[in-house]
Image (cartoon, rainbow, N blue to C red):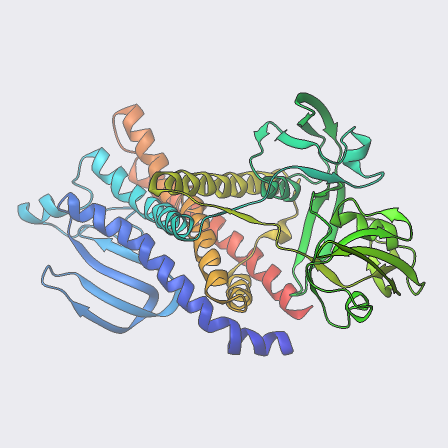
Amino acid sequence: MHSIVSLFTTYLPYFVLVLTLLVFVHEFGHYWVGRRFGIHAEVFSIGFGPELVGWTDRNGTRWRISAIPLGGFVKFLGDNDATSATPGDAPLSAEQKRRAFFTQPLHARALVVLGGPAANLLFAFVLLTGVFYVAGEPYSPSIVAVQVDGPAARAGLRTGDEVVRLVGDRINRFEDIQDAQFLYWAKPMAVEYRRDGKLLQGEIVPQFCMRTDRYGNTLRYGELGLDQLVRPVVGGFTANSPGQAAGLKVGDLLLEIDGKSVDYFSRIPELIGTRAGQPLVVKYDREGQRHETTVVPEADQMTDCAGKEHMIGRLRIRPANVTEFRNHDVFGAMGAGMRHVWSMTNMFYTSMAQILTATRPVDELGGPIRIAKAAGEASFAGWTGLLNLVIALSVVLGVFNLLPVPMLDGGHLAMYLYEAVRGRPLGLKAQELGLKVGFALVIGMALVATFNDIKMLLR
């Protein structure tokens, strides 16, 4: 019940705000390109159903906000419906034919259809470029700490190695490794890494993991046994921290735990994992002076990747900020923005292919409720969280619409490709059949996504 109340009181306003913005960007892409070719737009609608408010501009376009805020459309002159899929039957004058959508040359129609997805991708690119130019690009070196007896250790990697390639893809940042973990769960992953100036190769077999985050979202990924190589400097504490109670302060450099060297931050759990409730001597450096204290790790229950529960010890300390920010000039920021858009596009299509081939469960498809939930959760992180969500969803909206499914922009482009190859358009009956099939596919996906959303909401 709490989740349902939160949906309407916290999540829904942000969902409407984010979706309205992205739909406007998408439809304005169609509209803007159409105007460049002199095509008349009869209606520009945000939402479907009855009009709530609207106005007609001097060009005769009706701009309106409709009652159902789950999309939008631009209806061009001569269209049979809002999808611009088939021409209408109403007779047009010679002047109207010149400004109608279906009388335009093939390249013009294709560019108008492409304008919507392109606008979403361009919008994400511009936002990313601006963020990277103003604040810098988040960057964590791909030098790794290797967990004892983990998948990477079994593949021959050692702490201090620099991962260069994974599954054939170039690794520029540690974040690229994390992306690969969410794409490949159990598939052997070819890895190329650098050690002492030499390039080495191996193969990591990930261990499948499924966990639930603090918002109740199910996370599936392949555990590689790799962490960022981070100095063991105290960067902060969580509530009721045993480390803070023992006198540790932000900035302290941990040296030893019970006589064992703390070489990097992620080694701390290895050293105290089975010592919950037992006093441990911790030696540390503070402003060049060595000190020691006794800490009693707090017992905490965790579930491993195999689903087994364990009691482990925690100091409740956080590492110092490990993410660097690369400063860019305008062109560098544009290059970084393009790389990030391409990375998100690749992740989307790879995930969709995995769902279609049953290598990824269909319950990862999400609909409006999950988007609303994500928007509400992003709001807790402030404007940066919402901005990141807007960028990600703008890319998803753009690349989803490029899927070659009738009713989507990609389906129209596929028909135009047929027309370009055969020299004549697909017959109207074939188009109508394609639309029916496309409608069934889209509605089917929507029903599955909504079912997944409701299951998540009721958990």
